[in-house]
Length: 70
Image 1 (tube, rainbow, N blue to C red):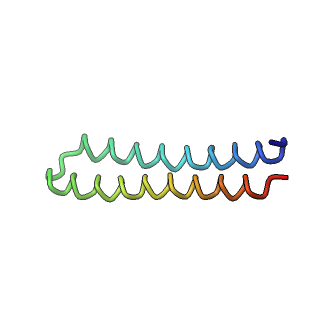
Image 2 (tube, rainbow, N blue to C red; image 1 turned 180 degrees about the vertical axis):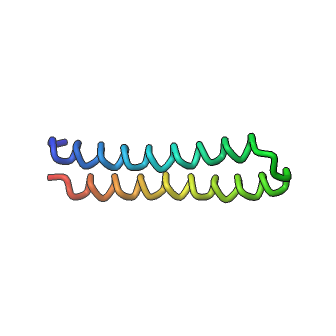
């Protein structure tokens, strides 16, 4: 793997890490909030789906970069 490919993958990972950190922080805030337990569960479920989507997108981006790799 060349340096450019490594740099592109690193950038994807940094971007994904930022998105995941924000989702995790939001889940923590919800868990420790005083809102109704059902509302907490609903919001956390949506965030888990969002988390999963971010991971799928990261994988797709990395696969694309690897395919373009010389």
